[in-house]
Structure formats: structure tokens, C-alpha cells
Length: 491
Image 1: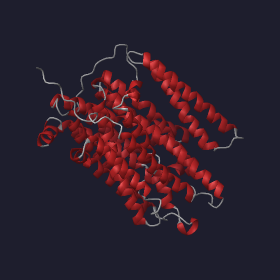
Image 2: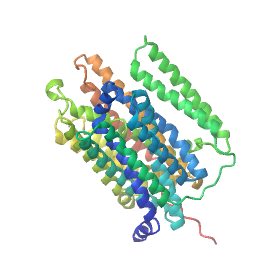
Image 3: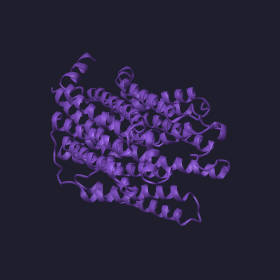
């Protein structure tokens, strides 16, 4: 343990520090805008409900960007892709500040989602650098570094949320919207100055452009079908419903064709064989199931807390600041969970650390079913779920890097984020349908609320059950999958 710590904060300490600032910036982006989404809607002259399209568009683009840039990181350099994605995020942040209409703001918001590739690129970069520092313990070093990066991300999210909430009441919105671009610009300079490029191995057939086009079109159809369904609802007499079904079938057929094409390609953009690898498929499945809660359940949590129990019979009736405290405490719990990953892995094993994290998420959201009437109960629930969520955010990319072939670390870590993002996008649509459908069928929820009591309970139950399913899947992982590979001794 002492040797591992010395190696991390000696040979890798500098690059981890620089990359921690990158994740701090990522956290600021993720938390900064949340307190004033209603102000953004008024600024763009749209309804509050329309801001949901911002999240959906960014998640959709993220699912497409991560595998492409992760693959390019493995072939042309992880630092280069960090610089490219940061430059796009910077330009998008500037466009957000000056966009006068909703459609242009939507495009800029989606492009800002390029920041989601930062963490998988960083994990791959650290894993490769750790092999140079210590060939016998790269996975252990990567897990420890991942905990630091995720802690920086959560600290940034807390800082961003508190800063955004404070500034929007004191400054013009145009000025408030411009500040993230400044931080991202500094982030680009930090990467350019402090991060050294990794050694790369060009693929035998160049970049798989055709494969990227096929998977992009397929995922766009799948995501588009869910958003169309979210708007039309489950109405068999609706043309929108059948359009969504047609898009879903075309997207599924496209993914099947993509898998067949990638199996024949000498250097595919996504090595689909990873999804049948006994060491990797449970990690990807866990990431997708985990994405349903960590990305899909945050909006329902916020609207549930803001719902007035004296009017609707449920909710907490909290103010915006009190609601931000719930989110802040949840993020602090995630930070603690991320930092405890190396301890849990050392006391048990890397696999059991993941299983325990999943069970904590399941317990936290399961506690919502009987305990949701008081502020303290909701904080307790989110603290438990946050500990498990932080551990999973930190450990899933590191687990994928350790289990993947040495030349596919960027792709493997990127796929965890892509699958998690797809899971969040799917959950966002499912939860939106559940809340609106139950509200409509109940007929007792006035216009303007996020949904019915039954809809919210469905959200918590789905988050809990999917976390349990992820824990079960991880039991099928081979015992050696997430540990450091020990090279055989000659002779």
C-alpha cells in the first residue's frame, strides 16, 4: 500500500493533479446551470418543460461522441483528444452565452456535452502511464487515481451549483452564462501545459468511419424514438406512437447491422466482441443500469422535493436553496464514496467493491418507498445512494481498463460512459412517461406538477431494482478480471 501511494503521488502525482483540475471543470459544468434552469427558460421565451430537451440532446450526443473520441484516443493520442474535446466544449460554452433563440441554444448545449469524454480519456491515459511507472500494479494505481478524479468532479459540481445559484440572483443572466467558458478556456491551457501524450498504436486499417456513421444513425434513431414516444405517449391511435415504434425497429436493425460490420472490420471503432467478453460485459451492463439512476433520477428528485405536500398530498415543499442542499449533500456523499473505493477494494476485492456499491445504490433508492415524507428522510436516502454512486463512477472506468486488452483501454473506458449515458437517456424517457401517464390516469394532479405520487414511487423502485440487477450481474465476473495482470516469470 505504501509503495502504491508513493508511486501515485510521485511518478503520477503531477499528471493526476492536472487531470483533477480537468474533472473539477467538468463538475462545474454539470452543477453550475442547475439552479437557474427556469431563468434560462424565461430568457429563451420557452416553457419550463422545454428545458428537458436540453438534457436529452446532450445525452444523445454524448452517447455518440464518447466511443468515437475514445477510439481516436487509442490510435492518435489521448492528450490530443482531450484538447480537441475541450476546445469544442469551450466554443459551445461561448455559444450558450450568446444564443438568442432556443434552437441555437439547444445545439450549443448539446455540443457542450463533449466534456463527457474527459473522464474515460483520463482513465486510459493514467492507466497507460501507470504501466510505465509500475508494471505490476497499474490497476491499483488507476483505481486510486480515479477516486481522486471523481472527488475533484464532485467538488466542482458542488462549487458550480452553489456559485451558479448565488450569481444568478446578483448578476445579469448573460454574464452568468459566460463564466463557464472562462473556466473551460483555463482547462484547455492546463491540459496543453501539464499533460504529456501517451504512446499510441495506429490501427491496421485506419479509422472506422463507416462503422461510426452506422452506429451514429442507429443510436440517433433509438434515442429519437424514445423522445418521440415521450411527446406522444403510449397511444395506439397516435401517429406519433407508431412513428416511434418504426424508429425503434430501424435503430435496432441498424445496431444489428453495425455489429455484423464491426465483427469483420480489422480495427473497428467499437470492438463489439467486448460485449461478449466474460470480463467486460457485466461492467458495461452495470454502467447502463447505473446510468438509469445517476443520470435519469435527478430531475424527479428535484421536482419531488419542490412539490408542495399541502396542495398535492406528497413532496417536501422545499425552497430552491433547500433543494440545492439535498443535491449538495448527495454530491458530498458521492465524493466520499469515490475516495473509499481503494479501501473497499483492498479490504474485499475489486469485484466485491463494485457489488457493495450497487447494493448501496439499491438500498438508498429503496429507502424512498417507505421514507419520503420528511426532509431528513430524503437526505438520508440520498446519502446512502450517493456513497454507492460515487464508488461506481470512480470504479467502473478503472474496472473496464483493467479487464480490457492493453490496446483497447480508451475504448473500454469510453464504452462505460457511453452505455451509462444511454441508460440515463432511456431512463429519462421511461420516468417521464411514468410520471405523466400516472398523473393523467389519476386525474388528480393539477397542471404544472411533475407527476403523480405513483409515478415518483415507480422512479425510486426502478432505480433500486436496476441496482440490484447490476449487483447480481457482477457476480458472474471472473475473479481475476479486475486485478492487476501479473506477467509470468521466465524459467
